[in-house]
Image (cartoon, rainbow, N blue to C red; front, side):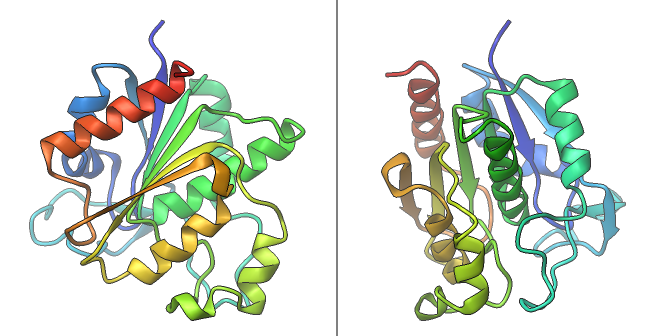
Length: 220
C-alpha cells in the first residue's frame, strides 16, 4: 500500500477547489504518495480569491469560526472531532498538506494527536502553505508574544517534522511568520517564495517540496 497524505483545504473553499489550487503540488506528490482530500463541515462565504473563478462550486466550507483572540479556544476548533474521525477511519496517513486556514486546523489536529500518543508523532511530516496564524489578532511579528499567543505556545509545540511555505506577497505574511513558532524549531524547514496567498505554481519548486517530503518519509 502506498503512503497517504491528508490534504486540508483553506477556509471558504472545498476539496474540489483545493484539488485545482494544488494541482501542481498534487502532480509532484502523486509520484510518491496517494492524496486524500478532506472536507470541512461549516458552510461559509467564499474565501479570498475564490470568486469569480470558482462560481458555482458552492457550498464553500471552513474549519472554524475565527474569533477575537480573547474568545478563541486555545486548543481546539469546531471541526476537530470530524477531522479526528477522518484521520482514524480513513488513514493511516503518513503526511499532511494544509493551506491557509487549513494549516491552523492542522496545527490543532497534530498537537491533539501527539498528546494522544504521549508525545509521539502521528505522521511523518506536515507541509503548510501560506498558513494563517494559529491565534487570531496577531498581525505584526513584534506582537507574537501577545498574552493569547503566549498561552497557546505554552500548550506545547508540534514535534512533527514540518515544512512551511511563506509567500512574500501574501497579505497574511505576518500570520504565516507567527505560525512557524508553533512547530519545533529543530524539526522545521521554511521556504520563502515570491507570490501571493495561493498554492505554489512553479513546477520545479513543487517537485522540490515533493522530494523533501519523500525523503522525510523514507528517513533519508
